[in-house]
Amino acid sequence: MTFSPLAPFARLAILSTAFVVLCYSALAASPPWLTANDDKIKAIVEKMTLAEKVGQMTQPDSGSVKDLDDITTLALGSMLSGGSSDPESGNKLSDWADFYTERQKRALKSRLGIPLIYGVDAVHGHNNLLGAVVFPHNIGLGCTRNPQLVEEIARITAREVRASGIQWTFAPSVAVPRDIRWGRAYEGFSEDPAVVALLGPAVVRGLQGTDLSGKESVAACAKHFIGDGGTEFKPGGGEGMLDQGDVRVDEATLRAIHLGAYPDAIKAGVATIMPSYSSWNGVKCSGNKQLLTDILKNELGFEGFLISDYNAIDQLVSPETDESAPESNNAAGQVRSADYKKCIEISINAGMDMVMLTDRYKEFITMLQELVEEGKVPMARIDDAVTRILRVKFAMGMMEADPDLWPNKELQPEFGSEAHRKVARQAVAESVVLLKNDNALLPVRKLPRRVHVAGSGADDLGMQCGGWTIGWQGDRGDLTPGGTTILDALKAVAGNTTEVNFTADGSKCEGADLGIVVVGEGPYAEMKGDRYDLALSPEDTAAVAALKAAGLPVVVVVLSGRPMILGDVADQADAILAAWLPGTEGAGVVDVLTGAAPATGKLSFAWPRSMDQVPLGHQRETIENPLYPLGFGLGYE
Ligand code: BGC
Image (cartoon, rainbow, N blue to C red; front, side):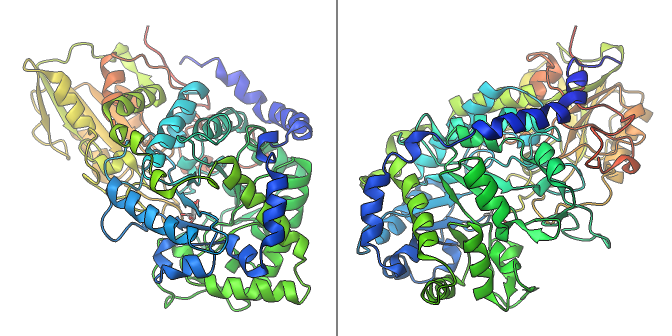
């Protein structure tokens, strides 16, 4: 077995990151361009009524705003489209551009005419829109260890987002997932804080450009502060058994592992940060003043604004699930507190600047004004929040812009273009990790006469893309136009000298010269993706066994949001490729199979043999005696 040169690096990672974070946190501060307009902002804030200030701090999901006049009369500062909150007219680029422009025009009709900053989860491309290029999820990008490539991907994402008008994405996730049973493990670049610190700021640079004011730039949002990837398993298991849980570690450990990318993201000028749903030693981050004000704003010098997670502040005091709450994009839309006013008080006083919410937005606006009038939330705190929000709007050049020009029409022809797909294909190839290659089976430079393809993921674009694609939880099948499944890509390189046959279960493979089985997990996102057992499905395992029984050399490709327990497949396969959630460009996987691209990916997570080795545990640098260690990845001779 060849170990990559990253293995010793990985061993030192936590210690060195702790050191780096300590040094950097002293130096971190938002760049001066973020505060450059503070004089102008002061003059505006002086003119604003309390209602107008609170309006700026309010961000409802567009699905909850039934009367668009509310945007004008309440002088809303922001809106979002959560995971499945699409325009009613449809889900194409033109639908989004019109939808966005209509809302923006309403904002400009308010007394002060301050535009909305509109947010979406463009977390691997402009992934909610039909026809957008879908890039690999972060877990795959972590295996590239390539900040230039990651920056370029973020730049392309920003261009596709601005083509629709939108100026803000809730990305990057800079979580440091420590338990791969978590359904958001794939949103993190790595279990290693050093890899997250390498790539997270690259996304910020790519999305925001050099100073945010460009017409191709999009405000970034580092999320979820802090420790979202370090929650403990909740006894009893079930849906959401790790998601939004509690991180039970001391402060030194919290900083050493989970502060990761934040200092450098702040230095890169990240415009916004999203506090986490999760708790640290029993206290919810969304209401923790030490974390939000003392550490982020005072110690690290963050000058942008904090946006709460989706209805997260409802969880601060006696949260309950209300099934009768209006449907929203996300299960958190149904979490309600009976003492909402107290939730608002705790959160705003802790340092939250803008609140993401659903149908409670009018209640929020009324209650926050009352809290100020009752002296429970200081006006200075409100002014600070509004100043921070306006800083971002000024830095983006939004205060002078004409809303008709905001969907950047010059960028529309390149939306989902071949040029963008080419970069995605390269990213896929660089993220693939070659785990096993007996008898140098790969690369298959010339496909043999007959290739048999099998497995649940071989011809499933939705499975390649995973969650946060078109819908919140993603979907199976051809969910978006454009893109190539692994089977399509194999057929494209086969030409007429090779016959490529496909049966999902591996039947009728007899007589083929090579077997390729694409196994893995179906799509999922937050909460629903928490799983206790990461074994491959019996169907996928049986497909590998069927090809093996027929005497074929077998290549197994794993499509998954985390390492999976391979069981017998680890022995049966002659070659194994981890392809993660590559997105729409399946051809990048085939490039590595055929040697059109080299095998360079290195694991961003250790790969366990069995569930006994999960979770990693905070104190351990990585699991002992894994099937493949962190940093592992074979190459071609
Ligand atoms: C997620 C965030 C996301 C937000 C908006 C939440 O449920 O935790 O990551 O940005 O929804 O869709």
